[in-house]
Amino acid sequence: MSKKAILRYPQTNLAACFLPWTASFRLDRKLFEAHVQETLAEGYSSLYITGTAGEGYALSDEQFKEVVGLFAKLAVRRGLDPQVGVISLSMSEMIARIAWARDQGIRMFQIALPSWSALDEGERKIFFATVCGKFPDCRFLHYNLPRAKHIVTGAEYARLAKASSNLVATKNSTSDYRRVAELMTNAPTLQHFLTESSYAFGCMLGECSLLCSFGSLFPETTKEFYRAGCERDHEVLRRTHVFLNQVEGILFGHCARDMIDGSYDKALVWLRHPQFPYRVLPPYLGLDASEAKQCRAAYRKHFAATK
Image (cartoon, rainbow, N blue to C red; front, side, top):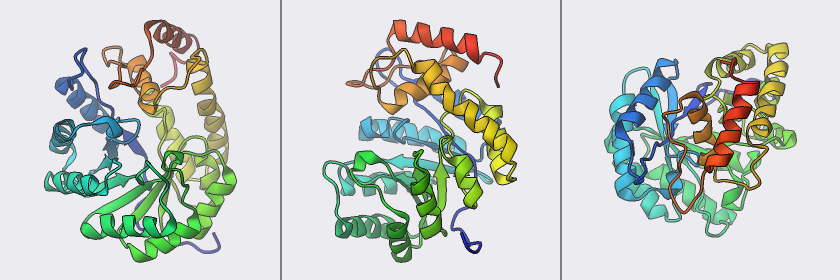
């Protein structure tokens, strides 16, 4: 970027929290509360639930309210910025869920475009203007993912941000460096959250934030990665980037199928905390017993000493 922009949201290390289901697919409330409390104890001030990895796409209204209500009681407090993901094919349902979570004290939301059919640019304008405009005292992060059948560019974000002052951030899980550069160049006032595949590169261009898939498994390594980006410590960035980007292949290379996001993320929590179940809400299938056994063996062989 040619000059330093004033960003709408502070740079941070964002942690995802996940939902532990019992064998009858009810929320294990005590385990969920312990999981959130541990995330807070590890020093995260920005944390979120019910994104794609948090199974926000699969929750009934009753489940959504149970999860968000528990989360809000733990995370709505001074010095923290809890975030709730809202995913639906229905914009009216999204608005209703945001309104309910707002009543619990949540003021930061992660939203994705409805994905039954790709929205054209006019429809995307309506979506952001309506959802963001309905809640002027809240802030919004847009999860820019291929499932929506359209990837928003930095140039379009600039237009959307001009119309919606409370659109403050984006989340992009990509290893496409050209896409990252375009985002940071053309939408410099938005805080761009990048995963471990592109965070190091983004830090070379300017200020960006981290959403690391492996934070639940390697919390100290993740913190060091984030610090290195903030301080432009290129050697640590390079070394940690190489390390983190080999983990998925080592742990899950034996799986002969693609699983829904939460299956991988819950497995990472389970590797560190075996009492945390790795099951996901049906009809989706997480690891089976054989896959889990091989995943555990790979973890013990390669990463058991990594914090």
